[in-house]
Length: 157
Image (cartoon, rainbow, N blue to C red; front, top):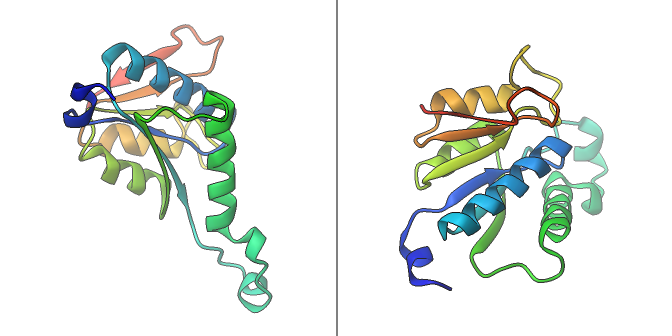
């Protein structure tokens, strides 16, 4: 690992398995390589609120296990079987926006897709990307879907 990657804050990228978060990850990887930066890939998960899950838990369907599996798949799709040593990956419990904003406190840049898997969205940005752009402690890059006038936009908090 290059010495500068050891001391500089990372680029943090939030993923959720959606196509837009995968585009955000691809953009974050390109930026990390170009800027000789570490990359931290973060996925948030929330405990199940289903009474059925509490009574009849299926370990393989637990939100933490599903998130870890999805995260592993996303990273494998981006890097193949060998993840670079400058990339760290983790799934955190909590609301995605809050988890990413917390991660932004130790980041140089936060990268997110403009919409994810959530159905709660504004007309312009998804609820998580909107929350991040207004609450993050570092600049936020919102990667929009292909075909929109500008493919990527940046915002600062």
